[in-house]
Image: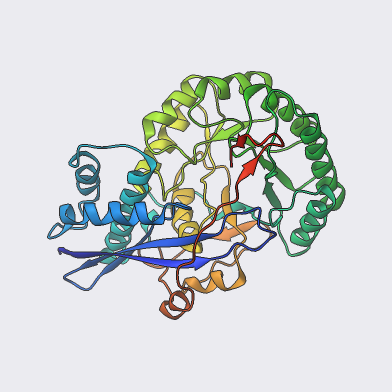
Length: 387
């Protein structure tokens, strides 16, 4: 079996809400072979569509004529034989191809991918919902949307506050965070899991103050409290916080996760299979986390394709914690021919060969790429705040 071409496909998706969430183009990768098997992967990197597509085009000549089942070999070729090895742009491009190769391997032997790496260690996958707040920033609206999602069967919620903040200690932001958490708990009670995504917006002092508020409302974890390049600051927050710290969506290689665990910066690692060079690297990251007593909660605010792929990782690793799932527009669930069917906070394991899914071509054609304009945050004095 030989690779004959690598195809990219963009599908436009406007995120439901009030504009404080990022619209995106889902970027899918299909690897074609001379035996008719086609593998499916995802390489969505919000706001960097052209860069990732261009990187995949640059990598394609390394793959043509090669056996797609030599996944680790071809992954090393893509990483190491273009001189420039790192970065999330390349990590996403490699991931899209690598994921498609696993899909081909599973299809070639008529088995789900998780059966190829030891079999499932759990019967169903616990998940949390992101995007349910629609990007709301007013506590009352956040509470109302939490109730709406709860009534629809959701049992775990992650949200962020897309607001610019002053450094060191922004008292108004702290009051808004407390109000939002109070509204959520008043609406859905004390049992559902609630997580807060800092989005890397805060400095260490501000994050420490926020962690105290999150602990008061028994939040499950505090995601990316500071910028991901600042491992020491993340560790400083972790030492002062009584809520677990999570990070990893913007890390592309396993060695970066070693630094976080070695410094005691995180309890929960969040590799994104569409960014961190794919499924094989994610397995290695999970093993590293397990060696440090850490947990894996895969990042996945993308299409149902990435969610379905991530379920295979979730199924096999012993230290799986919880899977992210994005509330997309209703039509997005029909992007795949076997839609995901959540029930009371869990998703079932896929059972078909490879990833167990295929794209619905008609749905893809009906949603051409869009212009992605990510929200921008500025403080009252005009200075730039992190999105």
